[in-house]
Image (tube, rainbow, N blue to C red; front, side):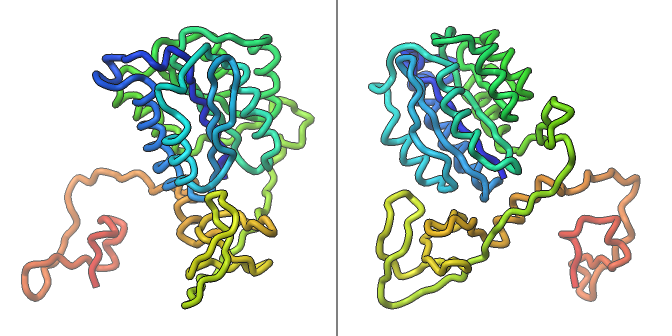
Length: 316
């Protein structure tokens, strides 16, 4: 389970047009488009994880969206809250990391805490010492920081990503920018605290309470909890929480009444395929002996050849 904040630079540098990123769009327009693609891919590969967005402009960090598992909420917030008119002032890396770090500090220890910063400025205007004060807090909280630069690499970004075991990249063009963002969809290895006396150094297994709701449909609309943050609304189809029997509109989500994480079996399967990847294919010197069927058109593979061929080639 991942908890990720995307920190977006909204300084005046993001209003400039970069020929490498886009010939017709500004940096902020290109960033919004790629971040929306990243959000959809992130929740496709990590359906039970959470995501939040932090905006930094005029040296101040603001929370656009809180940590949530609803991709529609983040995509709509980007369309409403970010445009070329909203870009102004200077960028503050410390304020952005501090705001995201305070929110991630309350997340459970069994989850992965991450921050992905998109920086288009060549400088950062910070109220304090980001390398000594902020970086030490991030390391104590086991928060992984990654950074993607749109203009050039800053030393402070490189130093923080190395100390917090993240990744640092400079976008060469729009396609490379998209590749760097989509690379953040894959869950990274877990971080272990440097303190030898800490209890986090011992390998433990935390049990996470989850519920598998039942789908209900009725002819008469009833009140259900909306996962988009609009409170209660009316609907004919809902998902019933197995603990408190509250009705939810979408899955996966956290129950609005008891806080139980509600998921389906496919959501868990898509989340765990990173832990149990498909083994690497081995090239064979010659293909296995396959026998044609009675019609002479389709190849039939016996069960004894399962280790020698792809499982998609098996036929009854």
